[in-house]
Image 1: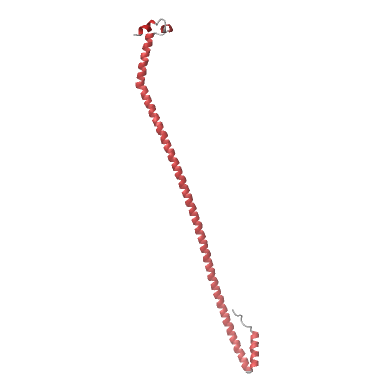
Image 2: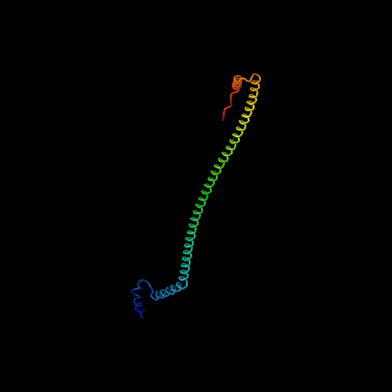
Length: 179
């Protein structure tokens, strides 16, 4: 075996440095056994735990990204809904303006119609008053004509006197204007 040459060199090589070769071999064997045991008992579970933790972190990051994407989507949806609501509000305002303008126009037309009705009533009233005044004037003219005829008859039946009386009555009462 090769242990003998190493032992022989004990006085020269490693032994001169203060190393005991059999102890070194025992330490190496113990170290290898410890490494194998640690690898079996501690290293694999620690690696498994680290891998699990890495998987949880990765899953958490993916979840955070999904939540963030969902939040962005909801933000965009909210913005879209706000835009739709703003447009709806503008449409309602425009509709209210149109209704107000239509109401104003209807009121103008109603007032105009009422004014026309009032004016027509006033015209009818004026016409009625005018007709009453004309009738009154005609009645008075009839009375005047009768009075003039009585005077003519009283004086004489002379055509010149008759014209003179008519002219005098007409001068006293001017003729009515024609409409």
